[in-house]
Length: 229
Image (cartoon, rainbow, N blue to C red; front, top):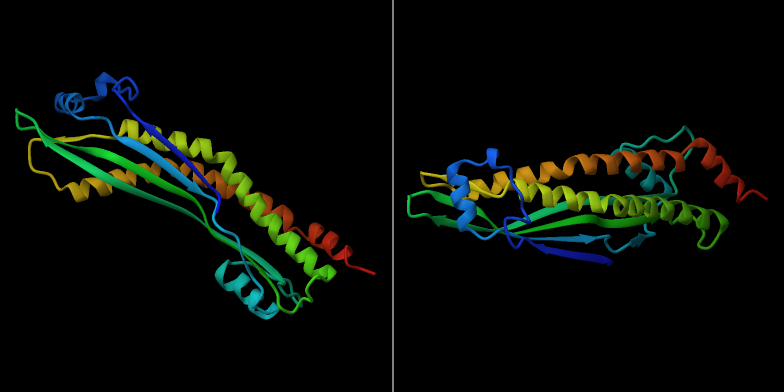
């Protein structure tokens, strides 16, 4: 499993600029009294797994039922590539009551885990190992997963920037009444996840575009020609 790990500690308010007009007096007092959060991002490309246990018919059913794919009449799927884009946020929350009664709640530590999970290549057991059809199917599915990996890595800086910006701009809740820290944590999580969605949508769109090229009738015809006598 290839992992990339990056940690940034916000050391002072200069590192987390906020517009003065956007701050209430209570928020300003909280920001002055609490340490900025430590934020870390861990990304993983997953560990590639191969599965040679399924038949053409089983892979065809998976392609249609599990992934919404289509198959032309008389054709069967001989290989599949699957993966999941995952994201997970964990917190450590700090809560403090100031001398004037203001209750301040903010993340003390925020960790984002994001990446590719369970990348798997399925090659039909009906294909003779090391035959031309077997090699072409393997290369086709490997190209699918390589494309996904490259697109994810291309957008990774934008994912990091969006997440750090979101934490910087949404890192404090102040109240004069008692607050439910669990509920606040869930609200923070929704906000942070929402900041990632535009970039994740771009990743999915780019992946779909490239996969359609690879699965085009023209490319399938070319791949079939590679094994013709």
